[in-house]
Structures are given as structure tokens and as C-alpha cells.
Amino acid sequence: MDLKLDHHSKDGIEIVDVEGEIDVYTAPRLRELLIELVNSRFYQLVVNMEKVEFLDSTGLGVLVGGLKRVRAHDGSLDLVCTQERILKIFRITGLTKVFGIHDTVDEAIAARRAEK
Amino acid sequence: MATVELSFTALPAHVRTARLIATAVARRSGVDESLLDEVRLAVGEACSRAVEGHQLYCPAEPVRLALTDMAGRFEVEVTDNCTPGARTPAGQWTSGASTPGPGPDGNGGLPAAFGIAVIEGLADDVQINETAAGTSIRMSWPSAGMSR
Image 1 (cartoon, one colour):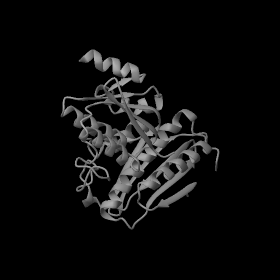
Image 2: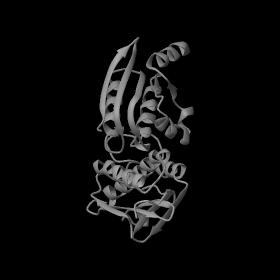
Image 3: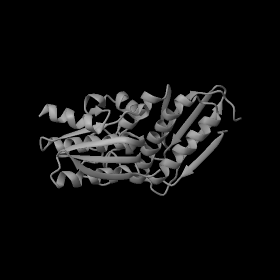
């Protein structure tokens, strides 16, 4: 399936809901959304990937790019993902050490609050 | 002769089609269900890399994908027509962003050879051959060899 993107605020953190496949064709749309959010001064982001069916290195690049952008404003970009097939690519690339990866959106928000 | 051969216009939209076909043929060839995600991801990475190179250097040429079910192995070969001068020894294209698409930092800071690193992490047998005509990435997985 194609990529569906949505976002909403929760407890002062912008939650980005991603559904579908993030690849070389669809990743530019996610990149544009993350840039748009940062330009709109949303610097605390949680990307909910529970409904992502496919993620490749292009998608990883977009997430790393988003992380760089929010960090430039002392912000954060955490991920929500429990799917083994998606987590695997984070593991083999070592990016589990770069992103905070949580089981639920509430857990991601709580972890972010605890770090403040 | 390959079990299935496919050539497609070097557009990102077709990479998904290539992934779907490769996964379907792998399943039919008897590749274990637990490995199909790896096949899908590795084929996608190889095709994305080829599309990127073609868009930079030879957009009119198709990317080629060959899927072969041989004795106990399912082999995938992705071939591009980009000449060796178009890339660095690390497999990175010598100009342009690390991946196609808009954005001031291309792939967001990941090295362009990242895709190849992912492929090498996924397939248990990877061979990259560079010739005057281009590069082929050949990778294989164990299969039950059922579709011949």
C-alpha cells in the first residue's frame, strides 16, 4: 500500500502517524512533513510506526534527517514500533542506539517527559 | 536462464513492483517464510540504488532484475548500466544527493553506500561485480527449489 501520513498534538508533543510503506518512492513525502513540522516550530516529535509495513534505508535516512533537524533546536524525535520486521533494520544498521524506540505513544511521551 | 526476468524504467515508483515480484517468486521457489522480509528489503535496496544511479547518469535505460531458482538457492541479480566513473570505490554515486528526492541534505546524513551495507546485512551471500557496462549485485538465499 501507499503511504498515509497524519499528525496531531498530545501533551505538547507532535505525534506523526505513519501507515504503509516508506521507500525510495514515498519517503520524500515523510521528509517534507518532518521539515514542515520543524519549520512550524514543532521540535518534540514522536513518529508512530506501528502501521508501517515496509521501511528501507531511504526511510531510515529521512528519520535521521528529521532527528538532525529537531536536535538543531534542542528537540527530540522518538519512534514507536513493536514490529520485528521493522525493528530488524534498525538493529542491523545500529540505529537502535540513535533513536529512542518505544512500544506505545504514551510510553514515548512519558520517556520524553522523564528526560526533561 | 533466470526463472523470472524483469526490466523496468528507472523510476522510484517501480521499485515497489520489483519488490513484490521478487518476494512472490522467492515464495514460490520455496524460500522460507521467515526469510521473505529479508529478500524483499534487500531487493528493494538494490533496486533503489540502481534507480538512483540511472536517474543521474542514464535515465532512459531500464534497470534489470533477474530471479533464479537453482539447486537449493534462490538468486537475485540487480543490474545497472552506470559506468564505473559514476561511482566511488565505496559504491557511492559521485555526484548528486545520496538518494533521489528533494531536500537540502539528500538522505538526511546517511552515507550513500548505506544501502549496500544493509544488503550485506540481510543476504548471506552477496557479490558485487563492476564492469565497464555497469554494476550487478547478486545475492542469494536458501530455497527448497520448487518452481523450476
